Structure formats: structure tokens, C-alpha cells
Amino acid sequence: MHSIDRISIGGIAAARIAELRDTEAAAFRKARPKSEAKLGNGIAGFLGGVPMHWMTDWPTPFPILVDGAKGATITDIDGNRLDDFCLGDTGSMLGHSPPPVARAIRRQSGRGLTYMLPSEDALAIGSLLQQRFGLPYWQIATTATDANRFALRVARAVTGREKILVFNGCYHGAVDETMVRLVDGRPANRPGLAGEFRDLTRATKIVEFNDIAALGAALADGDVACVITEPVLTNSCMVLPEPGFHDALRRLTRAAGTLLLIDETHTISTGPGGYTSKHGLEPDLFVLGKPVAGGVPASIWGMSEEVATRYGDYNRVKEPGYSGMGTTLSANPLQFAAMRATLEEVMTEEAYAHMDRLARRLDAGLTAVIQRSKLPWHVARVGARVEFICAPGPLNNGGEAEKARAPELEAAIHVALVNRGVLIAPFHNMMLISPATTSAQVSRLVAAFAAVAARLTA
Image (cartoon, rainbow, N blue to C red; front, side, top):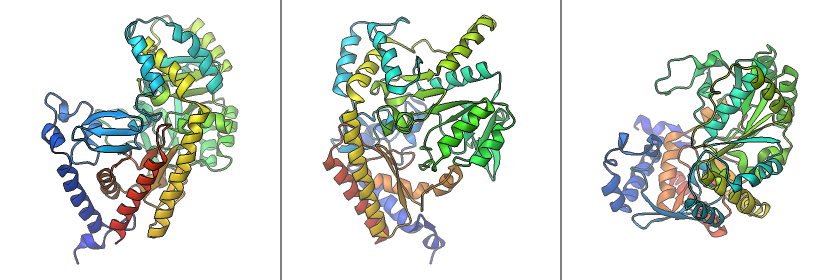
């Protein structure tokens, strides 16, 4: 017996995974001759053959060349239709081109796309954000990365402290100081950072999610300006908060004079006001990107009355000059138009009720397949966001989530699902339900997952 036959990944023999990957890659190529002809050797003129490097990180033999997308369906140039549960990794969580957003974009396109001044739509957005997310003061940026950077600057300005604290396994876009992890219990830069010569742990403390004792010890020095966290860890196998964790997080940060930033960019799947609203969290700072403008690049960041007052005091005495916050294309009228349509007409209670109902059904369906197949896997969910994890669960922290990853197995499953008409997120096994997703699409996903599980366990 070859050594590969004795290796198990996620309870599946490595040889079986390799066989599945090879056969599914061949099927993928056969179904996409036009795409392979245009993309097989990369797109001319682009570094690495793609406009953005992560387009080559999909586990398919080459990227899917999209002809169009509508609702919860993507069609490639070879005519293959895919039920889309990736939805732009949350960017299109509300469906591709929601009709109210598409109409708003058409209206605004003839009135100018950017001019560094507010439009009439901006008059409505401020109060919409207050009502929806609870905080009184808001700013518009272009990405959640930008919003997180700016909010952290405010936190450092008003506290006079340099350090921030993150949870192991976190993801907050490309914010430099959050690109850290614990290695054998010690802080370190995340591996693979391009051109990073600084020790990012100098200004960042790292503790495990759900570890209240470690959190309290890290805050006790009184040198942390801000804790930045998702309510649920979502980017490295989903980790849910244990009962009492968020109450302890808020209590400990207040006692230490540390601000709390809640990043809802992925957990907005929970409801119209995010996890924060549904579970009564009380952040000092709040960030949301990706779907807030229905797919148009935009983000929001808000602050409490107290933080706004302290920031006003800081600005009155600080040295004049550029704050280091803001980009020229932020808060443009196209963002205003799309965001207003999204908040008023798309991100509704009715839409989320539909999303939650189908997500519960998907959760139950995938769990039944896992149990029937006797696989040592589990399913996690936060609202309309569902993830199957190729390891036992539930997971308690980022360290456990890191060990639960099974890249070779996950890649094989991903390509096999694509060949059965289903697209999920490429970087983790995440699936989203949108307002446009149908019961039939959920049924097809569960059936496809069952077929792949049967292949792996035959």
C-alpha cells in the first residue's frame, strides 16, 4: 500500500481525495472549452494573468469566466448556469443586481458619478444608518478595510493609546496590524504577507476568541486603545461565541478604558441590523462593508455619542494637517444612490425572514448528509451564512479553526460542486442565502453535497 493511501484528511483517504480532484478537474475543463481558450494561459496584460491575484486562488483549474449574473445565478461564457451561494463572498449577499439598486444606479449614472459633495440621497442616509444600526454618527468609505483603518485611528486618537487587540483567526480586510496570529501560543505575523518587514505584534495583542481570562489579562495593562472583532469568527472555519462571551467582552473593555469595534462585514447575514442589533451588543465603533450598497463598493463606519465628543475634543487641539483618513472616491453619489436603495428596499425584515428560513433548511440538509455518511464533520451557521467544516465541532477559537482546515479536501469538494451546478465561496466552505435564492436551489445544493459525500465515502 502506498503511503498516500494511509493518510486521512477530514476522515477521507488522501488517495480518494486526489482521485476526486483529478476527475472533477477534467470534467470542469470539458464543460468550459471557451473559458479555457480565453483563460487557460491567463489574460494578457494582467500580472499573473488575472485582474486581482485572488482570482487564481479558486480551486478550479482556471477561473470561471462570467457572462452575467442575476439574482442568485451566475452564467459563464460556455452557457453553464450555477446556483450561486458564494455571492461575491458576501459582496452580493443581497443577490446580483437587486432591481431597486440597479434602478438607482441607472438614475445616478446620468447625474455624475463623483464630485466630493453630497447628493440628495445623502440627506436620507444619515438617519437610515442611525435607525438601522443604532449609533448616532457615521461616515462613508469605499471598503471595510478603509473603514476599519479609519475607525482604529479614531480609537487611538481619543484614547491616546497605541495598541489594539484582535482575536486569533480574525479577518478585517487588509488592515496591517490585524494580520497577526498565535503560533504555539506566541504572537507572530501571519505567514505569506508580501513585503511586510515590520513586526506587527509590537502594536497588536492577540488572544483566542472565547477566552475571557486571556482577554482580561491582555486588557489589564491599560494600553489597548481598541478591541476589533467580528461577533462571530467567519473567515477561518466559523467559530460562534460561547454564552456570556460578548457580555464579558463589553464589561472588560469598559473597565479597561478600551473601545470596542464590531466589524459586521460578514455577520450582517444575521439580520437587517446585523448581529449587533439582534443580540443587543453595544459597540463604541461599528463597521460594515461589502453588501451595504448592494454590490457597489462602499462601506460605513459609525461611532457612539461619547466617542464623537472625545474625537471632537481631540480635533480642536491636534496639530493642523491631513488626518490620514478618507479617500477621494469615498462618499460619492453612486454610493449614496445604491446604499439608499439597499437600506430602504432590499435589506428588509421580509428579505431576512426568507433568507433565515432557507438557511435553516440548508443547515439541516447538510447536517443530515454528514450524519448519514458518518463523516466527522459539522455545520455552523450565523443567520443566512452557513458553513460545512471538515472536522468535528463546534470550534471554540481560531486556533482550533486553523487545525480544522483541510485545503486539499475542500478544494476537491468545491470543484465537484461546481460540476454539479453549485458555486460556494472558494476560501472556506461558506454558503450564503440571498433574498433571490429559491427553495429549489437549496435542494440542488443539498443533493449535490450528498452526491459528493457519496463519492468520497463509497
